[in-house]
Length: 138
Image 1 (cartoon, rainbow, N blue to C red):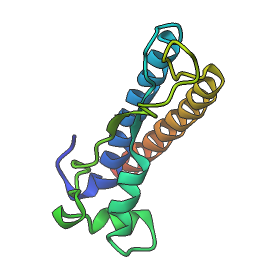
Image 2: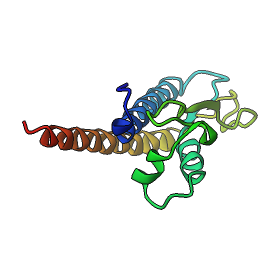
Image 3: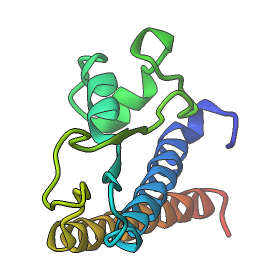
Image 4: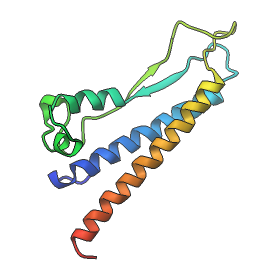
């Protein structure tokens, strides 16, 4: 990560894309373990962690919220502190007699959604870096 307040938004996008990639990996692991008896679906929560931290800033726009992030919000200005929380989904629930709780339809929808999110985050990151490039006159 770049260690400057000017790159707070870029670092936040970078961190969000890392978590999105991790979530895609977990979803693919769920799909791969669809036939494993007793396997429980794994997922990662990131959006609510980030949302709660940004709401805690009481700012109206994301740019301003990122600018005022500090340890009181659980984040710092260079985007560190925002991490996804991995969990086992419905640990005591099963769709099938073998104890597995992976639903392939749900996993495929979640995977497609996460792939779109990752592409959007990547495009936003590229746009932000392009603005820096324009600013330095390349």
